[in-house]
Image (cartoon, rainbow, N blue to C red; front, side, top):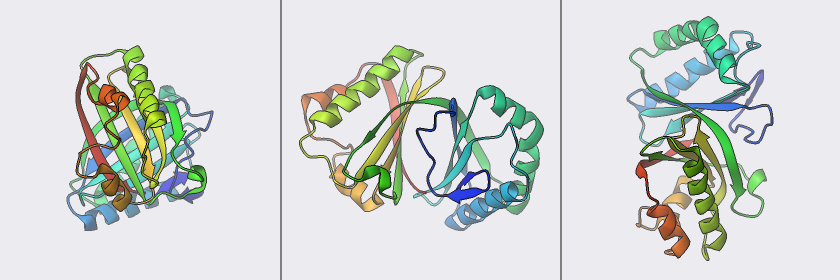
Length: 230
């Protein structure tokens, strides 16, 4: 679910020029039934109130393939807008959601800026994704130049890969504002296409020197790949 003021869609507009910061967080809710109930509770909490002037430009909720998690992806003009919303509006909405689905565990919140996007196949921007793959990469300390260099290395690997899977639609690479993380919001035709692209190797991409540079990049301390349904 994605809410943009009174408009409802399943896909945020990644390249909107007024989005100065992107906030990404995860909730753990326990079961597929509670996932669905939480999404409905989020939708009701937002639709039943006027859209705040200082609120998010868009707010999207994705359901995890694991039957437990929800990913929250929101675009804001600035962190100042988020802080104002947090102080004045957030608690009321969360109280309503928690009343509908008690026991939600809210896990982490990270602020990002969109750095680069790429279309991976013809017709990419027009193709509706059936799956969103979140690739979360962590570094051993803050270094904005290193974040961007790693993303640039991925783009070089993509450009020289002789056999990209046709199920990939687009990749949207975000760098955290604290300099320690990169998040790729990767849109895929389906979860099956992504699984097929992995081919049992644990990673997307041919065994090229460019991909070996990405996978062996110094300073990367961890990472996760998680599939979601928009």
